[in-house]
Amino acid sequence: MNKVLNTKYSILYVDDELDNLDVFRFNFRGVFEIFTAASGEEALAIVKNNDIAVIITDQRMPRMSGLQFLEKAYSSNDSFLGIILTAYKDTDVLIEAIKAGYVFRFITKPWDSEELRNAIAQALELYHLRLENKFLQERLKQYAGYLDNQVKKDFNFGNIVGQSKQLDEVLQKIEKVASTSSTVLIRGETGTGKELIAHAIHHNSKRSEQPFVKINCAALSPGVLESELFGHEKGAFTGAVNSRMGRFELADQGTIFLDEIGDLPLKIQVKLLRILQEMEFEKVGGEKTLKVDVRVVSATHKNLEELVKTGKFRQDLYYRLNVFPIMVPPLRGRKDDLLPLLNYFIEKYAKTTGKIIKNIETGFLDALKEYSWPGNVRELENLTERAIILSNDGILKKENLEFGPVFNQTFQTHVSVNEIAKKSLKNQLAQQEKERIVEAVKQNNGNMAAAARSLEINRSTLYYRIKKYDLDYLI
Image (cartoon, rainbow, N blue to C red; front, side, top):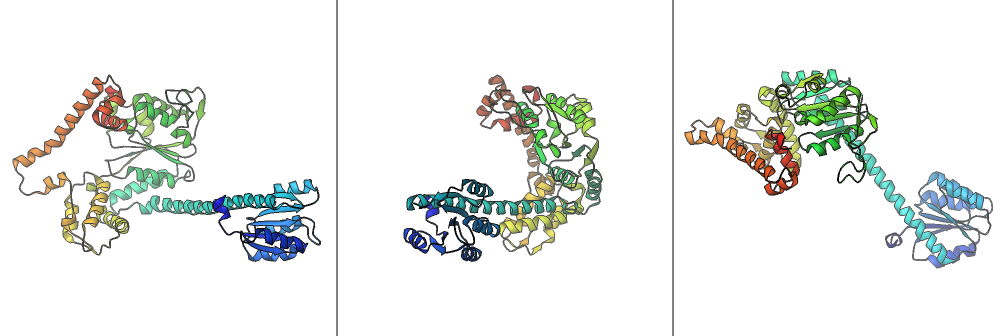
């Protein structure tokens, strides 16, 4: 309230009795910017040329009543709050005016200055909230437009960066399948841009105006993942204090992107197969069958055929997911895309780092072409950002490149026996980490939260590493 009263809002008082205008100006002098008018016609001119927050008007005036005046004023400016002063109990008309929105409240004449002051304060509070709401709605509208433009910009076929024949074949497949509702399985190494392709499929489909919902199947424990995918009912498990919608329900009429589908537990594979076949499921702890219309796009870097052979992935689910496969080639297999991608990332990170890149040395480009890119496009992006940061003169040079250990071992001309032996260090560390995880889970009798604490990592990280090292039997 104080914030509102400390703001100099404009108040208009309308009354055909001039003495009342003087009394109002005397009582409220210095508090507001005050306008007065002796008729509705005079008041309309004031409203037209000024931003009025609150209008107080007498009801019974010659030629134009207070209600008639407010109605006319409201048609040209619907932001103000109107207060009617009346000595008559014409309540039915006043109530209709309040419902219409142009009357905030009415006060019986002769008015009491304290009552009127409180009414004005309340009206200004609401006026202030209306202004804030209008501002926020405009911001939201602008932001929604911005997001829409960004989506179109980021996921248009033409903005998946590259010029190689291999990428062109991928784009042709996207174009063919996007307009359908067929299930798509995107395969490729980590960092090749599988999620970007999933976005492109959705945003160029008939479902583009509907939700695009994604979930990483490797990042959550089986229990949490099941609840995230299908939702749960109140009381379904400890901590389920409320019913919750799952990702499939959220994605109804739209697309769901199941990343790292190769890590999906067998128990959940059964429920996913049913959705693909029948488009129906039950929430965890629920009995009601829910129907959805969802397009499923999944992705994996794993060899699903091998997982099927070893019994870790259902064969029937594999065939359901693999209706339209898209293989994303690794960056080392499409070197023609290096330069377009490099230019794209230079433009992106030159802006964020505040640097201007004027030139690229030949040695810099040669080093990129010779590298094997185990981390694919994601690695190129990170490396480009780092090189821009390290550049001092706006020129990208070979010395600005900081490749990982694989690059250093690959490009050394004289590699000692000791240096070759270091290659196995990563495998040794991985084996030690694997053994520590097994030991921690066993020592804590399968309690994942306790095991994670003993390893000084969070539970989601523990589940991720269990999946990474194929230790599913611990869960």
